Image (cartoon, rainbow, N blue to C red):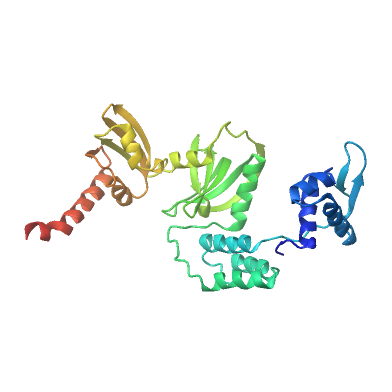
Length: 322
C-alpha cells in the first residue's frame, strides 16, 4: 500500500509513530506529522474505528500506547520507494523477471498488493528492463546464507562443508564473524580452528552448515569489509612475492587491498605478499602496477607473467616493425 496525504494514510503513519515511541502525546504526534493536535487525535480515532487497540494514558508520563491484539499493519510504499525496490532487486538478481524463481515470485507478490498506478509503473520497469548478467556474481543458496547469518548473529561456532574452486572438499570448524557481499559474491569472514587463522570463504561453495553448541566472542572493533579485503589473497595454492620499485603510498593507491599485503621495504621500495589459486589472473592484476617490479620465486606466476608479456609484445610487434 502506498502512503499519501489522505487521512487513512496519515493514520497509518501515526500508528507507526505510536509503535516506535510508546507514550507519544498528541502534541508530539502533531509535530512529527506536521498537523494540528486535533488532526492527530482524529488519526487515533480512525485507528480505533479500524480495530487497532490504541490506549490513552493520562498524567505527566502518559500518552498513546498500543494494547494487546494488534495485527501488523500493511506495508507502506511511495511510488519512488516501490520503483527503487524493483530497481535494487533487478540490479542484484537478474532473474527478477522470472515469476517461477524465488526472487521473481516474491517481487510479484509485492507488486500485486501495490496500488494500481504504482504497480503499473513497477511492473513496467521489471518487464522492460534488461540488465546485463554479472558473470562474476555467485549467489549462494538462500538456506545456506540464512543459516550462516544467524550463526554470526548468535556467535555460534559452526561446522561447515566446503568445496574449493578446484573441486577439493573438506569439513572444518569455524567461528563465523560476518557475512559480506562484495561485487556480487558472498563471503564468510571467520576464524578457522583447523588453520588457526582468519579465513574468507565463498558462501556459494559451502556445501552444508551445522551450528554447534559452543559460542565465541567476536573480535572487538572488527571491520568485516576491511578484514575481507585484507584476507581475500590468503590461504590459496600458490605463494606470491613481488618487489616493487615504488613507495608504499603509491603502490597502495594502484592495487586493491584484496590483492595482498603491501609492506614498505624502504622509502622507495614495497613488497607485495599474497597467495593465489589463479596465477594467470594474478599476472594480469600485476600489470596495473605503474612502476618496475620483480616476481620473487613462484615458478607458476613467473610463467604466466612471461606468457602475458609475450601476448602484449605480439599485439604491437607488427606496428612497431612496420
